[in-house]
Figure 1 (spheres, rainbow, N blue to C red):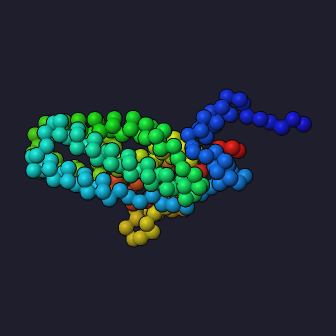
Figure 2 (figure 1 turned 90 degrees about the vertical axis):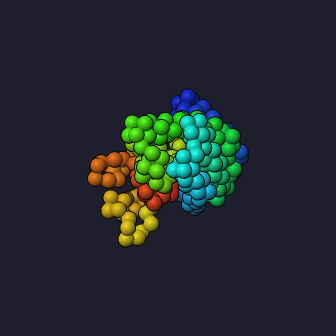
Length: 232
């Protein structure tokens, strides 16, 4: 009996994805016939980016930033987060699969989405100040911690970048992990150790929001990547 094969079109797509990695043979060896491999590295939080954002808030409060300054400052922070995220993503893949990534390919993907966020976030700050007739110090009440992803959104930009990289790579699923301490939210606590899909996240709060780790407001949870074998 002839074995079933995947359609040629799908095989071509897989090959294109593989070519974004530096060494296909190392990738094949890393999986060693396994359908999936769990990540052995937990990305670190970008402390430098958080410090830069807090300085941005301080300058905003002091009235030192004007319209164009807001865009420029946020773009600088976004670039810092992109650089940091790419480095962390490369560490994760290298320590788990033993390969280096084609970072130029992923940088293009991230910059397209992140700098769209910069424009949205800058417009949101200006619009809120005008509509509410707030002075900069009052605006700060809504901008504690890292910036939101979109108007009314939650989470932080670093988490968004990591999630985007997972989508661009061959990580379709992850294992949800919490900090396992008394302040973990009940909705998040029940997710500890469960396997979730990036494109179909679980309910994480009473409002019914479906989000991935770190996307909920002030969420400290993280995702342990599950890399899917592209050769299977």
